Image 1 (cartoon, rainbow, N blue to C red):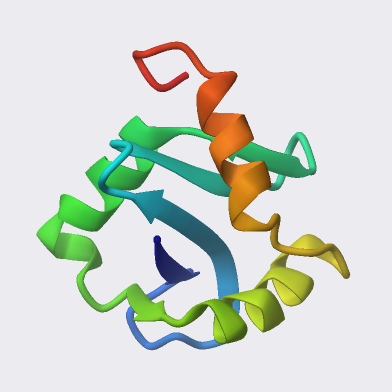
Image 2 (image 1 turned 180 degrees about the horizontal axis):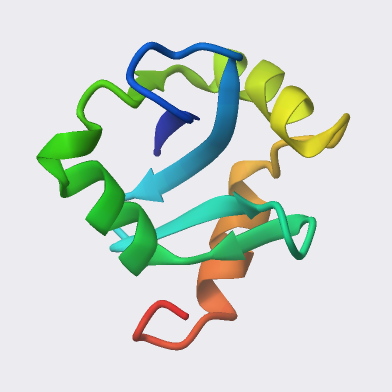
Length: 98
């Protein structure tokens, strides 16, 4: 799993704004959905964001321990799902990643 901390701008002012978790082996990714206030699979959005050169300074990869701290910030006190839960989210998602 690769953990991406997302920032609102390339200066990273204001701290983390989001968190993505990608499993390239499974070809899927989850993110914290601020509107729904839950972890959601949205592989297309994650891939588009990470692959867009304009965003290169708006994210960084971190280890799981750091991602857990960031999750508490971006979710308002929530926890990063464990890897089993993330894989369960992947399994419950159609092949098109939505």
